[in-house]
Length: 357
Image (cartoon, rainbow, N blue to C red):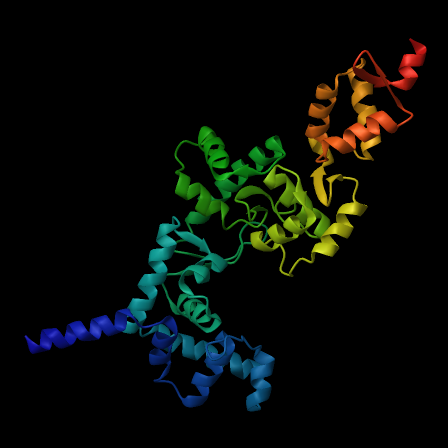
């Protein structure tokens, strides 16, 4: 009974071990210098991955000798694949990849298992490299750096990629998970939702943006490069006019920029780009939504031109409210004081049009 209890304690202890702890145990049987070199190369010490040249310079040996030491160390750790420590780390990684239908991009894998710590994330990759059951996958033009349980999965990844590309070319706009899954399944019923999303997640030419929409990686809506593109994306996703300070805040919250957004910089870009229309005090909308640029007088002239007739105060205010966020008094001041408008029988019209009549 005592022996069984002791075993249970050891299992509990092992279950709480980090990947870094487990790597340390398996490396402890190697010569001290070899341990140090492996830790530097895989970033197990401080999270920083060092080049072969830098490591070689530190120890006064060639980069080729460093490579040989690392290859030998990986081989020795791989030979410990039946040990409790190795199996514990390996099974955790395999479980995550299995949940993604046999393939998972490296960024997502370490995001799931790395505990937000660089050294721990690097330890996950160290075990993936040492494992004979986990395969590194990176096919140029097809996949990001990924890890798989079999090379056979690539055939399905290629199939999903081909179908998804056709769908995106036809739609010419980013699609949600539900939209993409439905359209892929409509063409290939054998695929499951999890399989489709998992396979899309490893592709290089197709990506999902921070708002959960799929598109070609080169599309501005997927990977906005500059401040103006980020502004456009935030407004488009918000589907409503926003103050420039709120736009800056949403850019930061969405994570579409690595740098903190400055409200004044955002405001300057909004002013310069004709895609954005000022509709109130610091409030901007997209021109594609039908908003008219210019002063309130210009907006009133445009409304009356499009109507082709005189309009009541209420009709004009309703239409202005759709295009601008201004006070009713501001609208009325412009209607009554401008030389462009005339009031006849309680309705407002363009003065030039009244002259013709």
